Amino acid sequence: MSKKLVSLSALFFAAFVMFTATSCGDDCKFEQKDFVGSYLATEDCSASNASSYNVTITAGASETDVKITNVWGLFGNAVNATIDCETITISRQEPDNDKFFVEGSGIIEKNDGNITINLTYTVTDETDASNILTDNCTSTVYAKL
Image 1 (tube, helix red, strand yellow):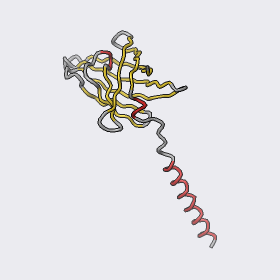
Image 2 (image 1 turned 90 degrees about the horizontal axis):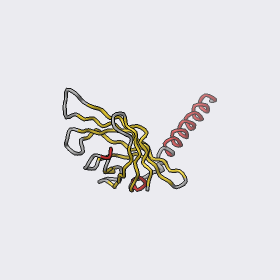
Image 3 (image 1 turned 90 degrees about the vertical axis):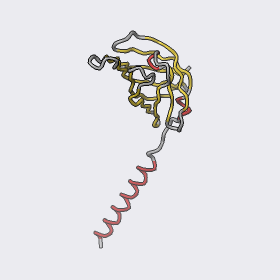
Image 4 (image 1 turned 180 degrees about the horizontal axis):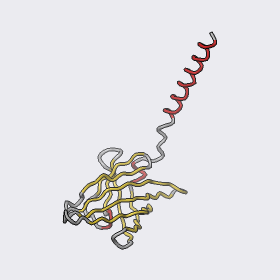
């Protein structure tokens, strides 16, 4: 009889752990609207000079899509990105159809009401397939204006 009681207690405990673990998994602190806005970008890249410029993030077609204009200070067309809570991801793409590709990721943070996005991305110049050039832009910080 005591084995059944122990087994039943273990089953209830396992069910409790599973329920509480799954119920707390969706505590996203950020939504698409938190990413949307105008920003001052300050970046440091491996193959280009450090620079500052303005970018704009607008809402995309779904609640997990955003568009970033003026990435790298040079892309004329918007770069498409996806968001998942505090994470932003730029899948490999060629925004201007000129053999310059971009991809990367980052996170959004909120401190004392100020929103910043720390983004790391790579731009590859593939105009010459035998000599692909890469510019790694790390520690890029977008501070919301």
